Length: 296
Image (cartoon, rainbow, N blue to C red):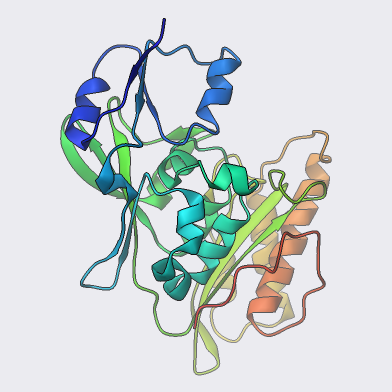
């Protein structure tokens, strides 16, 4: 029979997770499906929902946003601090699943589950976020870009849990957006998920990052895509960036389409996303709501 623990502090949670066969539980929207299907058989489940410090959203003195790993997605997209500073993150959180999922799912669980189809990882990647992990050896920080190590694999070590996410203050002139292409239900996992952050000053792009979530083997920044549009990008530059994203895609054939189709959609939606952020027009797709707002 599986033992259930609900610690009130991070230190107690780490102690509870020290037992063999122990498993951390955030919101449970993904984990419990794996348990019920028999893919996971924990001897002990350690629920992190009673730890107050994991449920906080704060702004540091340097302007960085610190989001506790236990913050629910519904609270994330409703947070005035998130909405005012990172509209794209709030918008993406509001698009995950449906209201019932958002009311339960936590940011830490969302990221640690490491399913590439999750929406928030590519957004946080282009925003330059880092994660905080606590374990038997103490607390450490690592960039989100180094957190994912493979398909549904992360750099978390045995006995570690995510405790928070740090998002650096947005630079002046940032424009950021996220597109999720869902040919079926809007509440479904996206077939392609692309996030972009541009810093535009004096009519030129001075910084750019592009990340691919759904469509890749794991969420990742796309090498070469951002560099292609630094300066005064033209149509060829956008095509080059979109081509880099398509090349980085690693889709599979399934009921949502062939791998070739998904790679083509990654190219198409990247080019449309960049066009939108740079002032061009973008035909509407089967997107839930308007793509993430610009941050200026």
